[in-house]
Amino acid sequence: MKMKIELTNNETKQLIDLFDRYHDTILSEWLKLASISEDDPYRDEVTINGGHTIRLIVAYIRDPETDLIVQLTKKVARERVEANVGIGEFISNINLGRSIIYRVFSKMDISESYQMKYLLVVNDFFDLYMFHAITEYTNVKDSIIQNKNLFIQEMHSDRLSILGQIAASFAHEFRNPLTSIKGFIQMIEKEAKPGTRTYFNIIKQELENLEGKITQFLYLSKMKGLDDESEIFPIDKVVRRMLEFLYPRFLDENINVYHELEKDLHMFGVEEQMKQVLLNILNNAVEELSNMDDDRMVNVKLYELDGLIHLNISNNGPIIPAHLLEDIFEPFISTKQLGTGLGLSVCKQIVEKHKGSIQVHSTIEETTFLMTFPVVTKKGDPYDNDSLQRQ
Ligand SMILES: Nc1ncnc2c1ncn2[C@@H]1O[C@H](COP(=O)(O)OP(=O)(O)O)[C@@H](O)[C@H]1O
Ligand SMILES: [Mg+2]
Image 1 (tube, protein in one colour):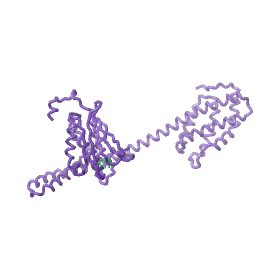
Image 2 (spheres, protein in one colour; image 1 turned 60 degrees about the horizontal axis):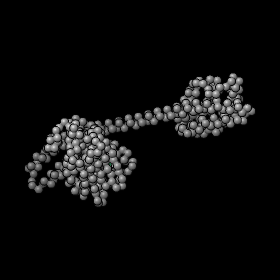
Image 3 (cartoon, rainbow, N blue to C red; image 1 turned 90 degrees about the vertical axis):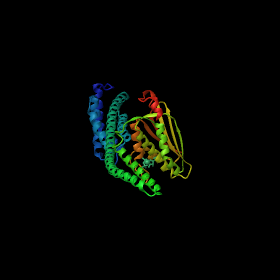
Image 4 (cartoon, rainbow, N blue to C red; image 1 turned 90 degrees about the horizontal axis):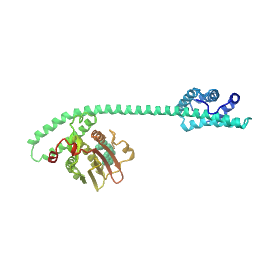
């Protein structure tokens, strides 16, 4: 690189002389005015670096090619990052050096035209110095942030995979006895006294609940659901059936259910998994509404728009606070005493497996879970229209 300002040999000599003569004045002024904290671990280095910087100006006047600037700014920037000095303070301390030199030069007994020329050289030096210093400073900062992110990610995925493994093994341990309990219950139900039907219904209902919870754990640990066969299915019918299935629960909880379901909307995927999504979101809605006084409402909308199936499920329960909204789809996030915090994370996994998206929107009036999925057009349908209509 060439210096932008050409100096004659004499000028070069004079400028270097000036720096030699005023080295100590500049340095002591600079250190006096710079803001350096008492507990800066590199306090002593700052003095040394200041001296190096002034000597470096001389080196730069001799040879603007010098890569000493890169080396010194690397050292300085790293130390400033480690000393926890903000970028603003760092820049202003460097600029202070520039203005102190301006001030010292302006008091010298040299002609104005020389003064101007010399100041331009100093200015060039500081531009270069600043450029390298800030580049290095931000590089070091960036890499610290990257490392921290990596660390957090690793911690997070470690924790998740351990919990996932525990969940999976527990779930398996529970599932087998559950299956035999269900089988034997069915056997004794046939021989049971009349009038015990209600009890059997409760037992069966509770067993289903338990099974549902276990299924969630298994989904989470990716043990189940991955090998299920994908196929084209009518999502409108699945939604309708799910609402019918939950109807007794809505009735129990005094919840009005409204729905607008566009007919014959097909999607590609696993029907059972979509049922799980609906179940989890509707269950959450019921749970939230059960804390409300009255006027409890659930609203389900299904329609096609711009080649996407939109499925919106809302309720007029309490607003979800902002801090919770951020990671509501993360596993183990729950505000319920006995909550697993898995429902929504399973939903997200399933929705994403179906190439869809899920979002939540919450206001004082209502909370809505908005999902979209690619619609399966009849054109690409491997089945003929008849068989679809017969379903
Ligand atoms: N419809 C909703 N309205 C308000 N809060 C909700 C709603 N659905 C979910 N939440 C919040 O999200 C949390 C996580 O839900 P979820 O993943 O299903 O786990 P869990 O139901 O076991 O707590 C709930 O504990 C609740 O605080
Ligand atoms: Mg839930």
